[in-house]
Image 1: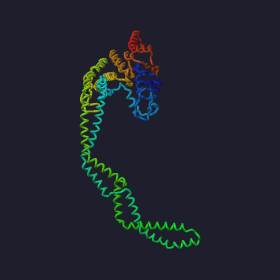
Image 2: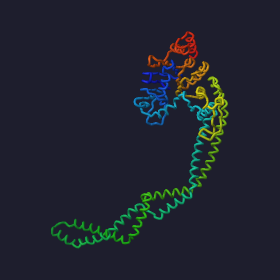
Image 3: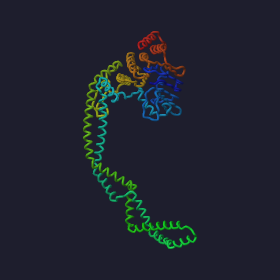
Image 4: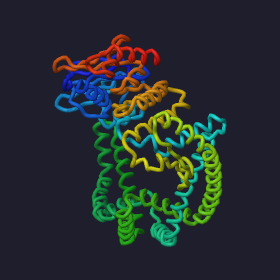
Length: 511
């Protein structure tokens, strides 16, 4: 429910604070006092309407559940709309877009003054029907859950089968291409780091002659080695350091000569050709590692293509079995629903009769298999499509559907907002609307603007919206104040004793 609403600086309102209760909350007051402005500002808090108020703020006790991890929710949450240069929206002082706050609030708040068809959507009507069946221990919701699980699995398998059939049409071409790519790489048979080794060989071959010539000239140092030993001996200097250095130098030169001599067996043209072949592969696929990974991928694809017939056969068998299961569950669900639809119509028309409306008829027709079965509920008011009924009839039919739904509700359904739903109705019609709203108020917090004494008298909480000069105000009325306000609605500004007596009678009855 909305526990508190605060409004600052909006048109004729300077500042208003309302402490709100559960149940049926009625707003009355003379024409032009600001009732619709006040209702509009409440909706603006949740992104449902636009207004230029400096601040609209609502404190709610909804059990909020959203996927937006950026918003932290508490047991009591504050929705806020601030307008300075532009509109900004907040939940618990955390900024949120208008679209996001409206999407979140729409789960908990319905504005029945709008021509909104959501209550007549097939999913909602089927849900009411299935809940009625569950109440009679027919376990329709359990059957619906089993059907939904089977249907989703069927859709998944069907999608996989369609993908395979699509691949199968080009399977020959894909197999040939994969085999061609594998053979092309196998013909080269590249090895990890082979390109690096070949480049190193190419580099050494390019400097072989020059290096061997240089080694040959440098080897002359060994011819004078004995002279160095003699000199060190005469100088009484230990010669082991020189011996070690010469041995190390000799080993380096011998190793280099041996390595270059091995290159005599290497064909330079073969090396250059191999480098070019590997470079072509690398230009197309990346590194040698990428080339080998690509080959592995093509081998796996080829194996998949070769096994596709087996996979297709398995999926076809699974699709057939799931299709039969889906049809069986849908048929059973449809049979249950059809057994209940007449009672559904009877109870709906009972409410419509209270609301002084013509009979409605809901029929179940077959449609394509979907998440909720193969049933579609087509609802008409006295054989008239809902798109063609008047706004007053449309809204009262919505009330009847909500009332039917509320019979099976186990928790609070949120907030309903109605703007003059009893306008232009007779006293009897207004009382019928009031009675239905009173029943709904057991499950919803309902805000309603009324100009009729019958609905006004049913309120669990009554606010008077009035003007003093050019400034609008709203205050909660006690019993005596309510008597005066209902009497004003009955007889006008000149309140008669008869009007006051009738107002007390209405309040007494509804109390």
